[in-house]
Image (tube, rainbow, N blue to C red; front, top):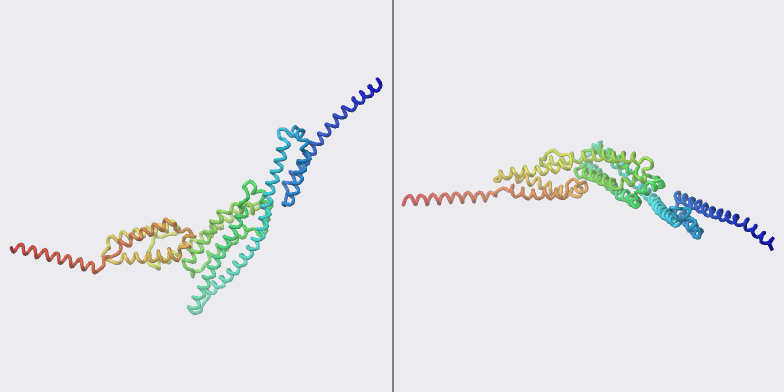
Length: 411
């Protein structure tokens, strides 16, 4: 019996330390396996490329949590000051965040393919219209035909230009606005990460730059056969394009600018400036020439502010002259000439273009209207029959006074 007790004691002495060592090794394995699997899933999430891959990683996250839930206390101690549940929550949040990015990117690439196809169509149409318009311009320059044929060529040329400008506006509304929608849902913090995985084949920035360059060159080399309305339309197209770029440009640059978004931005901004300068100079010059032929002699103007000031000063000066010329119709004829230009051209034929180009504000137009009403009243001459009536009345009154005075003296 003593021998048996002794043997048991020896066995306990040997097995207890062995058990403790085994338990320590088991705890270490749990911690190590959890950390290794966690790090592997985290690394995979950061390099994920599809929603299918996300789904499989979510399965691994679920297995990691369920396999280790029984070791939560052990892992809480090992992960302190963090915890098992907080680490799992971080991993799930990362999966959700990555999934959102991947969904946006997949959607972007699908839409980019469709928009690239549309962009190719637009470019083809613009090229065809450019060739046609160039041909008409050369025909006008070299024309020795009759005045009637030359008039038809000019009409076709202007029509072709109008179609081309309308197509450019379609590009702006269809492409740039669409790209705004594509990048609009990406948060600022995720934008740089997303940009690295968005396909840039058929980069829209290159197409934007091409449109700007071609239209700038077009504006610089245009002939003198265009009307004020044509130049207004070209100026309005540039204005709309620039305003749209201001709204969507930064995010487009971040997503499609690759490693050199600042270079893209500098080139496009510089191109827009040149385009605006070219269309602005032609538009204001054509407006000035039109006014010279219509006998409306405004002060010099070359921008929106000076144009409004020239209109305002012209009316103010004319009103002053009207106060001293009530017996003549000269000032009234000047009023009618200006009113014809203002109502028939600015507020009727050019109205939409004036608004699109933001040449005059609503308040400025209203101000001119009010001053025109006052000018009309002040410049309207006295009718000749009224003058005759006044003369007759004064003569009769003078005669009556003379008769009465003579009668009084006689008596």
